[in-house]
Structure formats: structure tokens, C-alpha cells
Amino acid sequence: QVQLVESGGGLVQAGGSLRLSCAASGIIFSLNDMGWYRQAPGKQRELVAVIFPGGGTNYADSMKGRSTISRDNAKNTVYLFMNAMKPEDTAVYYCNARRYGPLGNNYWGQGTQVTVSS
Figure 1 (cartoon, rainbow, N blue to C red):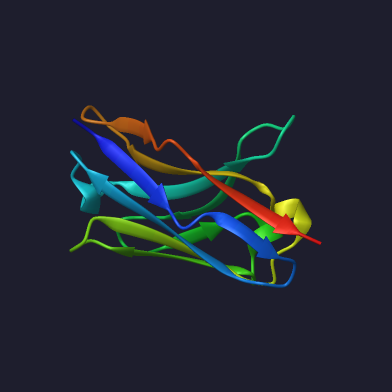
Figure 2: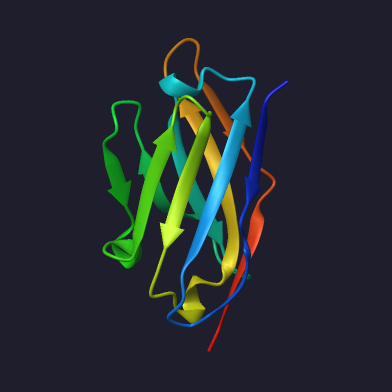
């Protein structure tokens, strides 16, 4: 059974920082692209950041310079550190595990709410 369990969401003031964690089980973690996405009310889900099995990363333009994604393959956990947070960062943040190819998969966590107050 695959599980992606996010934690670390909550209320933070503008300019503050937050670290999200996503613990994965039931997948070969080291072979998966691990991503963070977010969805604000009335908007489509969008990519925040992704980290690839080799450690390469990709960030949304809005998060470049304000966030860092990292992974710990020994703990099957991916992290997203965000700082200089803005009210427009308010959203539900979802963890994603994706693997391409014949044995591919695309799994989502249940989401964690992040609210940035002005």
C-alpha cells in the first residue's frame, strides 16, 4: 500500500519560513521524482518544486530563491523549505511521487494546508 504523508503545514506570518515533510512508503523512493505541488482556492494545482533521483531540482519561477527541496533516500522523505513567505503562498500543498516507464507510478499525498497571514 502506497502512502505519502505530508506534515509541517500551518499558519505563518508573511516573511516567515516553514518546512514541509513528506514520508513515503510502498514505493521505491530512490527511483521516483518527488515533487511538491500546491492548489489555492479557485486555482489549478501547480508545481512548486521537484527533485529527481539524481538530486537535480526544478522550481516554479515564483519559488526560486525562496525555497529549497531536498530528499533523504535513507528515510524515504522529501522536504520543502520555504522562506520569505507571502500571502499568495497560501494553498494546500501536496506531495507527489512519480516514476516513468513501464513500471511507472503517479501518487499523491492527502495535502497539508499552508496559510500565510499578512
